[in-house]
Every structure is written in structure tokens, then in C-alpha cells.
Image 1 (cartoon, rainbow, N blue to C red):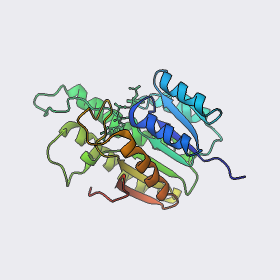
Image 2: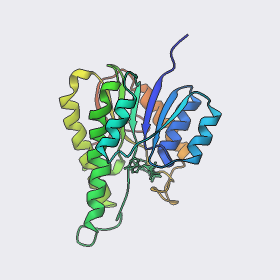
Image 3: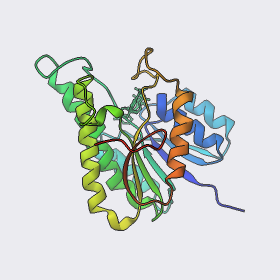
Image 4: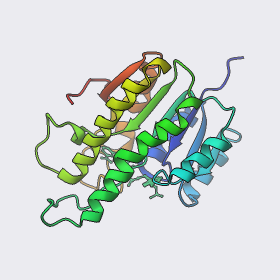
Length: 229
Ligand SMILES: NC(=O)c1ccc[n+]([C@@H]2O[C@H](COP(=O)([O-])OP(=O)(O)OC[C@H]3O[C@@H](n4cnc5c(N)ncnc54)[C@H](OP(=O)(O)O)[C@@H]3O)[C@@H](O)[C@H]2O)c1
């Protein structure tokens, strides 16, 4: 019998992280999904897949919280570590008018914390495994058009930090993916977004699976197309 593959999804209470969890459960995977506060939706999902969903409590912006998860998962192997957690604040504002705390919070949650989580949890992923982080099409400096400029900057910073991570951890032979899921109707994406969750997340999971065993860093969209930095 083949062993059940395992994915850890950081930030799975709702939106895209919840959908990733559901998609991988439906594909027969074991999922460790994290929340900051209890999510009834996730608990109900677990009841549909007995024994395959574990729910952990983690705040990615808190190093001790991530380290405590690392300790609880000691001895486990992750086929995929998927860092999804993210926030969007002051989305239509420029630096002259935005609350600077909004920008600092986004830099902490969207850029610094995901890469710190990769550093703290990456040794649970064996060679050949995958570390994926949710970035955005808006993180592309080349394609930037000024929309959501503070949020976009935090995703560009995430991409840059992952360049550093990839260089420093090349010998670990991980597949490293910066994933742009498209503009999706979630609390963050809003009701005007182009895509439903169902139009994005199954393709994202297909793309992650297609990149399995291909070490190195890629900035990719849900169709597995490489995006310009
Ligand atoms: N929707 C889009 O169009 C779109 C496009 C490109 C990229 N993305 C990216 O995709 C990811 C998910 O976005 P979404 O649309 O699903 O947003 P969402 O509906 O607002 O959900 C955000 C998720 O991140 C979690 N989170 C936020 N801060 C966290 C923290 N400090 N620690 C742990 N979890 C935290 C939230 O948990 P709580 O419930 O505890 O707040 C929630 O589960 C984000 O990284 C976002 O930037 C989204």
C-alpha cells in the first residue's frame, strides 16, 4: 500500500487556505491545517475525512508559535509545506495617506513571516519535497501598474526574501514555489474578483503536484506559467 502524502497548510481557516485543505483531502492526502482561532468550517470538513485532517493553532507572525508547531511535528515528514497566510490593508492608499502600521503589518505577515516559517519548518520536508508560498501576480515588479501598491510591495519583498532562501538552502533540493493564484473571490479578493475559488485552487494544486521533484525556485501562476520578477 502506498503511504498517504502529507501537506501542512499554514493559514487554513477560510478563503484559499481552507480551499487548499479541502482540495488535498478530496485527493486522498493527509492535511495538517492551521488556524489562529477555531474554525467551525474546518472542524466540519474534518468530520467528512475521518483521520485525515489535523488542526493546529498557529500565528505565523509569532515566531514562538511557529517554533511550537515545529516541536509538535517533530519526526513527521511533509511532502508539501504550503504557507498561505496573508493580509491586505490600506489597499487603495499610497504612503502619503496610508496608516504606516498597515504597511508594517503586511511586511511582517506577507513577507518576513512566510520565509521565517519556511526556515523553521523546512527540515520537516525531505529532499524532493515542496515548499510553496502564496504570493500574488501583484508581486511582480516588472508587471506592476500601481494597484494595491502597499500590498504589492509586501509580495515583491516576499519574492525577494525567497530568492535569498533559495540560494541559502539549495543543497536541500526542495521544490520552491511562489504561487500566484489569480484574483479570487474571497474576503481579501472581494466580490469583484475574476475567479471563483473553484476556478483557482484545483489548478493551483495540479500545478504544485506537477512541480514535485523539480528542485529550485519558481514564481508561477496556477497554469504553471513562469511570471516575471
Ligand atoms: N484572493 C485573492 O485574489 C488573492 C490573490 C493573490 C494572492 N492571494 C494570497 O492568497 C493568500 C490567501 O488569501 P485569501 O484570499 O484566502 O485571504 P483571506 O480570505 O483574507 O484569508 C486569509 C487567511 O490568512 C490567515 N492569516 C492571516 N494572518 C495570519 C497570521 N498572522 N497567522 C496565521 N494565519 C493568518 C487568515 O486567518 P484568520 O481567519 O485567523 O484571519 C485566513 O485564513 C494570501 O497570502 C493572499 O495574499 C490572494
